[in-house]
Length: 343
Image 1 (tube, rainbow, N blue to C red):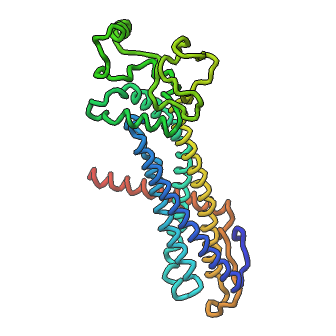
Image 2 (image 1 turned 180 degrees about the horizontal axis):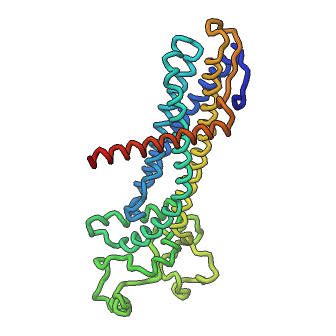
Image 3 (image 1 turned 30 degrees about the vertical axis):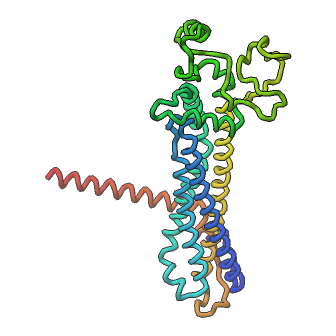
């Protein structure tokens, strides 16, 4: 007995075909949107590549681009089939392709599921890449004369301004590195020389941050030097006063940006599976309803459509039997080839 049978007359078949045609072209629009999001995500990763030490993974955006293109092609084909379904002559040429097409749609839904899950699972990899990349970016901030790092200062400054963040974990990360190049240090000055020599690694360390850490919304002029020295500033206590620099770390800010983007895209992709499943179910009903017409010459006659020709249990049983038969056939072929090679 067919699974979920539905009776159709001429009017219902026409409405189903028209509704499916609209849903298929809506799916094409969704495919274009997913493709565009993949391009946008890839561009964003390229823009922040230096912040990730050029180790960022482009697997997710590449999959999004592929899925978007496939969605456009698969759903455009389905829309064309629905458009021609009520014309027996035109539908006849599509009929042999429908079974492989529906199988391809099942595989495409599997790819959508994989892509959607990766949008969530790959967020941890983005977090680790940002942690290592930002750590190195801060370390190389001063190397404006080193080939390959000339624009690191500009990139990091623009990132801190755009995302309203400072340092990797927080602003104190700047205290642990020398972020001013030696070419701008007067080594003949005793204060500079003493600060460098007092450090084990002979680095010029100070409790200061770059200008890009400053919060322009603060009413007080930016205090970016001697942040932990209360006596260096009037009416100032760094332990209780709200600092007028960004206190949020760039790793947190960038990860929040990328994770929210990836989560939103993941939800969209998983939602697309529902839309694609509706397309497949509707097309199956439409094709079976057209095939079971009592009198194909009479478009007004009734017919019956279904999702599966047999019940769910019987269908899966047949599928397993076919897979076992196919596996045994492959084993027999391999055995025959081995015997021929031996002789």
